[in-house]
Length: 194
Image (tube, rainbow, N blue to C red; front, side, top):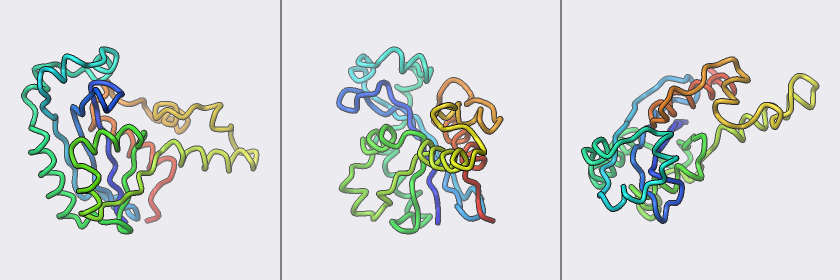
């Protein structure tokens, strides 16, 4: 089973208005933890999309117009992702997407590769989230009086990292920083059987 540890950055939170600016992922063997491949790119967006940016989102991810205007076109990025995931045999029942916030990442990912194409390629429809994994694990420990309840520690990735005595995510919030931090937290919370 392969996990696609994925993160995206966008110029806001509303996918009807805002656009994906960056995507990164690592393909990981979920038994061994071996990283099989990685991908990262900045996505070019037109000036009219950039002008609609939510300034708080831009402050958090630190993107500039210069970076965004020089990124790859959505079409180029889409084809690279399709080729890359296909080369690793990414298919339903053989792989899953793992994110910190799949409701955000999936909708912006779909701006690059629409759901019909994802379905045609038989890509996984399971997008798992770290916070739910952490919730289940800490609830089990709390029931055994071996740790705090999850809402006492918090569910942000940085809060989960803190619980495991790991560093916070590097700033600014760039997609590959997010992927690497997600993988670090997953390794601490869930781990790999081998």
